[in-house]
Image 1 (cartoon, rainbow, N blue to C red):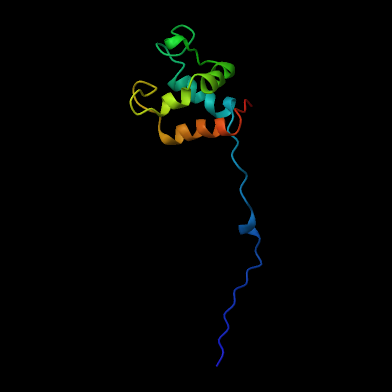
Image 2: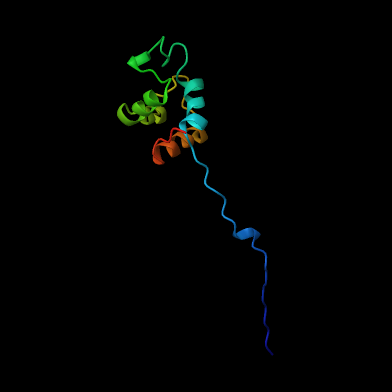
Amino acid sequence: MSLTIGCANDSTDDLTIPAATVITYNKDVRTIMNQSCATSGCHNAASQSAGLVLETYTQVRGAFENRGALNRMQSTTRSMPPTGNLPDPTLDVIRTWITNGYLEN
C-alpha cells in the first residue's frame, strides 16, 4: 500500500516581500526630537542645555555622530530625556535612521 500526499498552491500573493520602511529625519526623527529634546529648558535655541541645540538636521546628526546622543538616550543611569528614556520603539526609529546613514528626506 502506498500513500502519497501533495500540496499545490498556484497563488503568488504570499510571495510578495513588503517594501522596507525608510526612516528619514524629516519624516520620522524630527518629530521625536521636537517633542522630546528640542523643548524649552532642554535642547532648543533658547535653552541650549549642555551647549547642545537639537532643532535642525545638521545639529541632530552632529549630536549622534560626535556627542554620543544615542548612548545618552539609552543610558540607564543618566537618562535623556531626564524624565526617563524614550520607549524602545521610538529608540528603534532612531537606531534605524543611524544605521541607514542619517537620511534627511
